[in-house]
Image: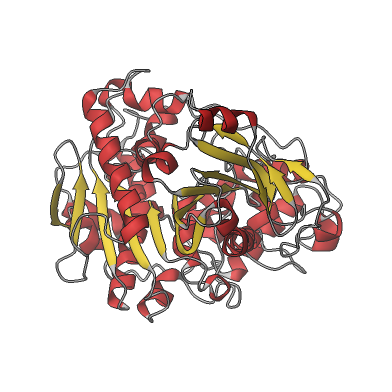
Amino acid sequence: MTADATQRSNAEPEVRTTAGTVRGRWEGRLAAFLGIPYAAPPVGAARFAAPQPVSPWDGVRDAVAFGPPAPQDFAGFRNLSLGEGTPPQSTGDDWLTLNVWTPAPDRSARLPVMVWIHGGAYKTGSGADLLANARIAQEGNLVLVSLNYRLGIEGFAAIEGAPPNRGLLDQIAALEWVRDTIAAFGGDPDQVTIFGVSAGGSSVGTLMAMPAAAGLFRRVIAQSFGGPFLSPELATDITTAIAGQRGRRPTVADLSTLDPHDLALAGEETAATQGRYLDRWGPMAAHLTFFVPNVDGDVLPATPYQALAADVGRDVELIAGHNRDEYRLFLFASGKLGAIDDQEAARVLDVFGPGTDAEKTYRAAFPDATAEQLWEWVQSDWLFRMPTLRLAQAHASGGGRTRFYELTWPAPGADGLLGACHALDQPLVFGDFESEFARRLFGGPTPSVETVELSARMRAAWISFATTGDPGWPAFDTDDRLTQVFDARPTVTAYPEESSRQLWERDDLAPLPLLP
């Protein structure tokens, strides 16, 4: 061991933040600072409010353990059989914390910054997901940040007397912390890339459309940007049903007296009978989550599609992309693989498809498809593929510099039945081969050479984009729609899902209304 390494191992890293000094720990060549508060705990008088400033502290605060996640709503996820386990419930109320990994906790370093916003249907997950080794920070010589934000009812339910989209406001507060503080950790606040998968991908794409987030990041990587968005009326009606599980009204006064975990459980109970709301909520009564952003006209003035097409965010560089077989994950994990018949396919096509006769148009577009394929494809299109494509098209049409990709490489685990499923890109980008979820995807604890090579290729592209703005493939436009296809042999081609694009081109993906 060199003298410098010996000195470093005996001196834990310390950094002065705007609220006080934090002491982290060394993880190999990275200094890790975990559980740093970026806003005050959203409890008591601050519950359901916009995020509040942190109270400063004296002395040195240990930052060596992840902060507790926000209360979790596991409806639709408890019975999934992919081995990813059930995330832990909160053991405290300091939910609004973030984590920093840096190779150079020195103000002079000025390294690029990547801020990871976790997914989980806006109701599960935490900033600790898949980040134990922070390989992307080490390989990219950059600063990595992850964060917790309010989920489910606490973060996204429409509540009278509370600002809407509080989970997104939390994310903005964390990005403001990055702007004000990340230089002390060796990061460059002018070189911030935000990225995420699923609800995380939707979050980063939505932040592009939010006035309060303007100027807080330079680049965005939206992986599986998911729809939908809600109208305020539908969002309020959903909250009314959940509050009714506890005999309450959807107001701050009524709901603030309920324990947050019990309120999350009320959301699960509502989901157990959500089918009865189909004539009022439409697709949201058959969706995996009630909690998505609502286009309230103020915090979120318009959908990202509308905002980006109108030149909002044109100075932000964007990578958007999805996986080919997005909904296969849920088909497989719910045990329905091989069990979808024509009647079930017709029902799902009617609920989620575009236009008034989606079953007919999908069957005409895919005449050789089985009932199960139609069931899977329409939900992949509605939830992930078409929203992601539309985000890229809107950004490009508004004058932004846009790149697009599709992951088509099939996961080798589960006897190859998962295909290029939802969330496959997450462990590939992070180089996670050890979690139980990754082992199921990759077929065991020892990944194949092909898996490792694809993972390295995607990670290198993400790092290059965060560092230079160029991931290594041509820009996307609304005419050619050039797409980087990630497979064992990568190619660049026209958008591969052209049949689906044509089916959806007349659907404006407007906020879902409350049905009469």
